[in-house]
Each structure stands twice: as structure tokens, then as C-alpha cells.
Image (cartoon, rainbow, N blue to C red; front, side):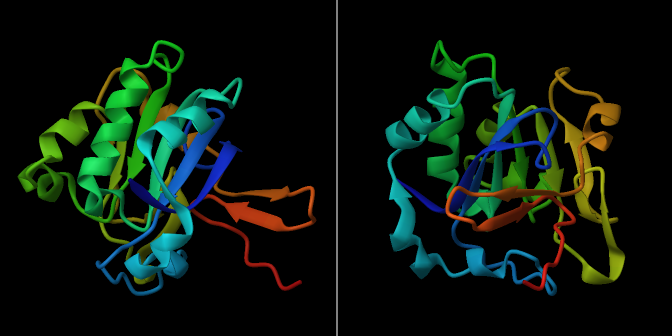
Length: 190
């Protein structure tokens, strides 16, 4: 099971190209000024508990996407679920060409020291790592703050590809809800 806060089938502000974005539910890192505080409480996850098969089916049903993005919350606090999803995306013939990107508050060194860390990293094309620091706010090149690093873990993308990602986007749903995503989402007063 994967505890998700939300998902967005097609985003251009969460990595290169059109991406299926999954916001994992639960994060205990407590970064001051985090702009996804609703994703922190792991108890809130009962709302969207899906199997890996259900998530893969949603991704497979979304045409013309370049990749998937894991965000949060903290994907690395659900390592079994994140790894199972990444393995399935790489193994599924209809999804095998999708790129993979993850945002994590953990550094790459911390991830490597986790029991499944090396396996998770082996299934990623790009990792954005490091805790968000409000005093070093950046919102550029997929980095929320200047201490965060972009790790190209495969030859799929260049730093220029990552830097060209829009910092924010707005989508209006059929029901009229406004969805703001990206590393520098707009703060709207409606």
C-alpha cells in the first residue's frame, strides 16, 4: 500500500516534461516553512491508501507523459512502497520508457545509509535532496532552497533540462478548484 496525499496526472512544474506526480503522505522531518504541511501527518493517509497496482494503472491510463515524480511528504519514509512503485514502472512494458524523479528532504548520503536506499536510488533518473530551509528560499531549478542539490543519477537529463522546468503552474479542475504546484507555487487569496 502507498499512503498518498494527492496526485496530479499531468504536471510540467515537477520535473522535465509532462509528469505524473505523486505526493506521499507522511513526513517527520519538520522543515520550518515547508509549503506542503498538509502532507506531514501520516495518520491523514487513510484518505488515499492505494496499492501499487492501482497507482500503476492510473499512470498507465495517462497518455503522453514523460515520467513520474515522487514528492511529499517524504517518499523515503515509505521506502518499500516507493521502491515497489519504481520497480513496477521500470518493469511494466507500457511504462518502461518513463523517467523517474524524486524530491526528498533527506540527503543522498542519508538515503544511501537506509536499508533500501541504494535500491531506490538505482531506480531514479533524478533526485532533488536536502531539507527545505526557508531562509535560503530559491524556487529555481526544482530546488526549494539553495542548500538542496540536484543529482542526475542517469544520463536521461542534463542540469539544463532540470533548470528549464517551470517553477509553478496552475490548473483549474472541472469542478472549479485551483491546483497550484511546483517548487515556487503561487500563493493565491481567492
